[in-house]
Length: 258
Image (tube, rainbow, N blue to C red; front, side, top):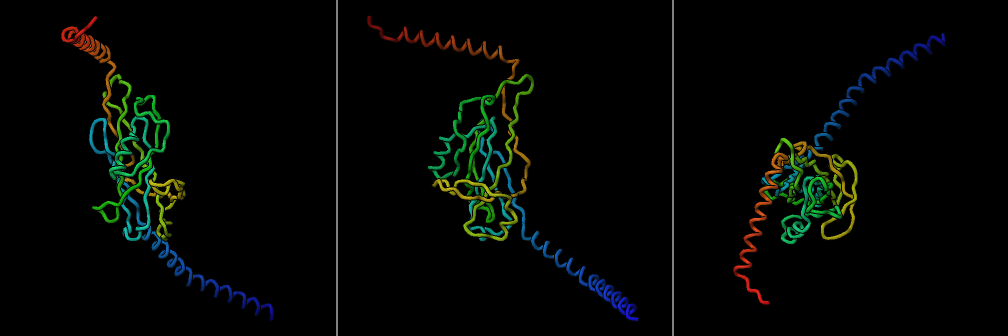
């Protein structure tokens, strides 16, 4: 009799446990789902828009960053843009220094031994750090401005244009205090100068973002190889003509004393 009573009690306990799991399982899952949804709702996307202004060999690179949260929560935060410049473009460090003096932009070259006169095929990629500023026309936005210039390319055999691809930059953020929402965006830490005015190094958070455009592509006019003979002949003729005119003017109006 005792073994039968023990077996009945064991079955009863198993049934009670199954009923409890059926009762509390969906509720717990629903609570966890609501918690995950709440976290996802807090993690609004960062939108980055990169575009190139002007035409020709001298362009302006404009970068705008929009946060989904109120800028009041980010008053103690700074935004740094790490932009790679392809070999087909260059940034003039002397121009950047002049723009910094006039408080137009806060950008500095990172690459050393940089030749702004070299053509595309003798150049290499460079790197620029741009300290973004808050956009006066958008409460939740930052923007950065960088003048770029196209290098000379080799002449092409068919197409009269060369394509230059400007990849999206790295977006770095540093805040004086911790924000829970910062964990939604942070991807890793990167060491970089805290500000343009000093050499102190800070650990910036590399942020995830959604880009409006995958990349920016510039079309640069280049010469055609079929025009090589014509260009060389015209250049030689103009050089001879100008040299002849200069010599004639020197002998006609110059004063020589023996």
